Length: 116
Image (cartoon, rainbow, N blue to C red; front, side):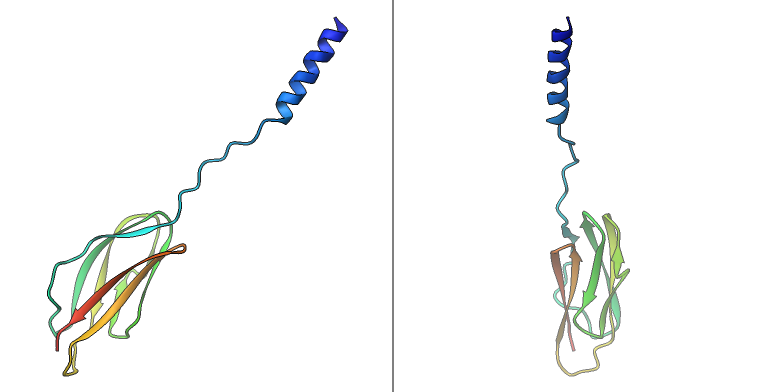
């Protein structure tokens, strides 16, 4: 009987020591622009455009031009509408600016063209 209990205890110990902790799979960080307004170019006047994004984690948005910015400039996981703002174009030329949405190591860009 003792021998049977020792064998059972040994098998049970081996079984417990070989168990691994199961962890929830990690969702890769990603961001997607879901809706983009269809325009041929914005007017020279100051204005805004709404864009819907979807992110799997916290995200940020940055602009490459001083006349172009987005609010909010950061957010949490989920679907959210952001507003892209552009200032009046006082130059005599059409101009372009890019907003980059970043989530982890992934990014998506939105390019806005503004007429003169």
